[in-house]
Image (cartoon, rainbow, N blue to C red; front, top):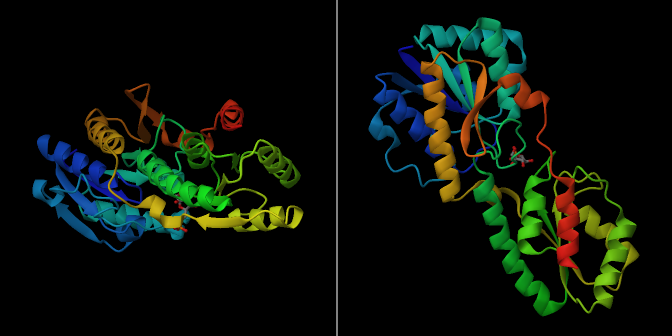
Length: 323
Ligand code: F6P
């Protein structure tokens, strides 16, 4: 292997830049040429390539987002699109590809690797933390810290005005962000895509809280909750309990931005380095992850076919300690 390429794909995640920096610097340290592909798989199709030097990644470790930009590329599901991508990689003399992204990106990456025997390594980057094969994904730690900072502020005004706030956090299919931030902010209830939401139960819980003289509260709602997002749930609760003062806050994309936390910078640096060394050792078609503080490799296929599950006991714990 002489020349490697890297791209960032899917929803951006704080720490992607730290991963880019580690890949570029580890590559150069090992006498490899490193090529950045802009705008994810779409850039690969348009030959949107940039040669990366050591100073191309100076002072980016602390920055959120991705200097290579990111995109979701639906066409990559088509075989002919992947053929074009493979042809472009060959034309540019690229011997291997590192894909920084989530499970959708790994599906495409895995097909590229299998169909053409092309060496591909994945690095788990998503604020959702829903990828099998790593304890944590790059971006999750920063995102949950952004959420609790916001919820602490909401708590102040909720308490001053005796309001129940429904705070919507990201997580279309996964409740990791909701569960962690609910525990950390002492929220009164947590609604997740993994657990069926019962509006009656939430109402009786709120009544119970009122009897315990609690006049305000925070209910964290994952955007993927099956009963609807925070707006819909707040509306249904208000129908049952019209006397309650309620408000909705949707945190939205602020969760994806911001300077990465120390933990995300370290995780991204170790995994970026691990991806390049994996290629040099002849590994391919795997994702590099971190389990019990050790670098581990998981076949790409498993990362999207298996699912990292929330621990249902934690929901119980969260309820017990917020009563
Ligand atoms: O995958 C990360 C994520 O932030 C999800 O939590 C969220 O559902 C989705 O991206 C939002 O994506 P978009 O900004 O493309 O709507």
